[in-house]
Image (cartoon, rainbow, N blue to C red):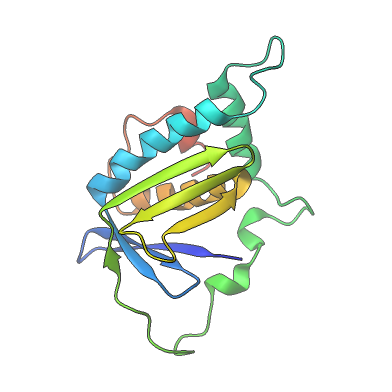
Length: 164
């Protein structure tokens, strides 16, 4: 299972993305602020339920999907408690992390119940495929990190700023 962690470097004014494979990437403010509206639109276009008569509009369906993804895990464990041990790995264990690689672009794809985060420059770790629920959690973590950095997130759909 691939695990992703975000953090912010104030000296670089960049968000770093660490993949459990050991790869680390820099995400610039401009890249993140360009990516978030596009991925929100993608999720709205690909949310299920549009074929149901009298279904809620796509924006409302994806908002519900997003909120549910940030709630408790299927077994009732709060989302932030799941895999908690991976976020608190012992300092000094293993080799030092590789220096972050500056991403030139960040994109996403969605089909059915799967979403992919596509990192460029393309590397063997360049595409991370996730369930939609996991993808929503990834977006929430990215948004929390960007908010913590003081980045201006105006212009995003309200549902994407819920619970972050």
